[in-house]
Length: 103
Image 1 (cartoon, helix red, strand yellow):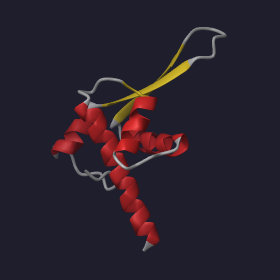
Image 2 (cartoon, rainbow, N blue to C red):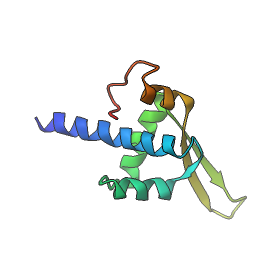
Image 3 (cartoon, rainbow, N blue to C red):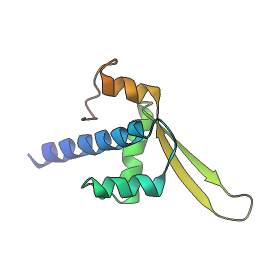
Image 4 (cartoon, helix red, strand yellow):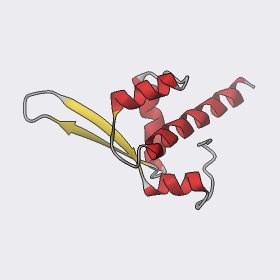
């Protein structure tokens, strides 16, 4: 029973991630902003768990993740993410449901 509840929780977390990004108009969202939004929605996620969900969503072509670097030797990075057209199609039911994402 516990595995089932964990699966449902993960599916919901991925759904909230996609909804957040879709509602942002498919624009890029900085990683820290997405993490804060998830926490406000009741899903505080450590970076490794958020990365896991984004990897899953990227595998389904629902999100794009990009890392920007501030030049050579500076060591500053900004990770950002956005939903894709396919994510909107999933949400709107224009493509088959993904069992790993719950809206």
